[in-house]
Image (cartoon, rainbow, N blue to C red):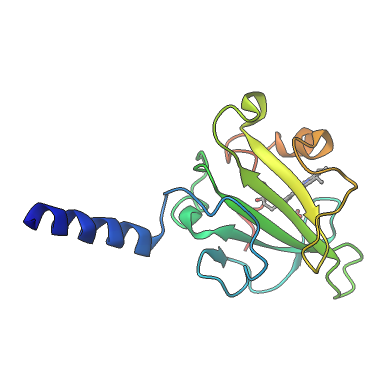
Amino acid sequence: MRTLLLLLASVTTLSACGGAGPGPGEFKADFKTNSLFFTNMKARVKGASPHGSQQTWYSSNMKGLVSAGSFTAPEGTVAIKEFDMASDGTADGYAVMVKKPAGYDAANNDWYYEMRMLDGTVMADPPAGKTQMCIDCHKGSAKTDFLAATAIK
Ligand code: HEC
């Protein structure tokens, strides 16, 4: 009994601190207020992608990892980039990456890509999935497991 209690206590501690374990595995519409997500950016900043200004949120399991120069994101990790194509202060939608179980797309680090409208609807174009145009650019960030915004504050 004592062992069981100790075990339960450590499981609770692990999930409460939210580091390095599996992530939520999917886009959550309330990501800005949901404790399953965090952002290191105070506002949108102009990035180097074709998406204009952006602010990126990661699932909380990435808290200890994003600042590292080299890492592998755990299964279920979610990255959400709110983008403002024209950099005019109005957000246009969300670019999303989800780390799928090993084997989903082994050659490209098992990421699933999707674009969503502000209301959360998945866009048809570009198609969701192992989207080649997304992969072609994101694979350049090999050390940070295809994630390109980890160093942006
Ligand atoms: C031409 C290069 C390029 C293409 C194509 C591209 N991205 Fe990105 N992406 C970036 C860069 C650079 C960043 C870093 C933030 C910024 O500059 O906007 C980024 C950031 C992101 C992020 C934030 C998480 C992170 O750390 O990388 C997501 C999510 C994302 N892109 C999704 C997508 C999706 C989905 C597609 C395809 C529909 C896509 N990207 C296509 C270059 C690209």
